[in-house]
Length: 151
Image 1 (cartoon, rainbow, N blue to C red):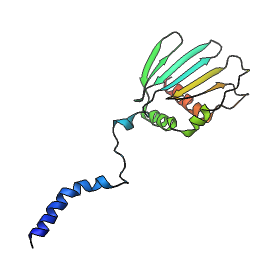
Image 2 (cartoon, helix red, strand yellow):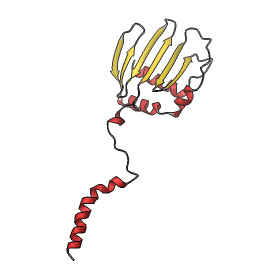
Image 3 (cartoon, rainbow, N blue to C red):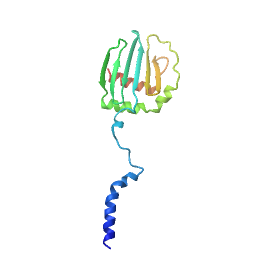
Image 4 (cartoon, rainbow, N blue to C red):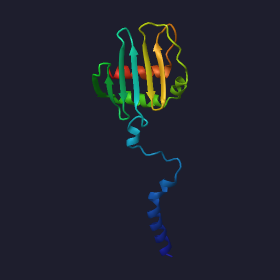
């Protein structure tokens, strides 16, 4: 009779570490893939203005950014953790896809800035001409975040 309880205890000791593997509600492990953007670069191009500027900000999935002006001068940096967290949230915001589907009307503003935001295969844009239209909310939030965070 003693062999059965000993075998059951031995079997339980072997199977207990595996018990969590079969649970469907176990959260996915957090690893290196969760530390950056969802595997895509974020590219913001700001052009126009009275001086005819063209600035490009590229943010890699790990949060490192490069800002290039029309003369080709570059600056590099890394987004602060809070900014990277917010950018991660915004890159998966469904509003961006909806905003990308909207055709941007021609503007009558002279010397206005145009913004083109590309996140993976999704590109949205707008012209900063307040009397004509309100900028798309999610796109404008990413533009504001990147403009502020990269100086």
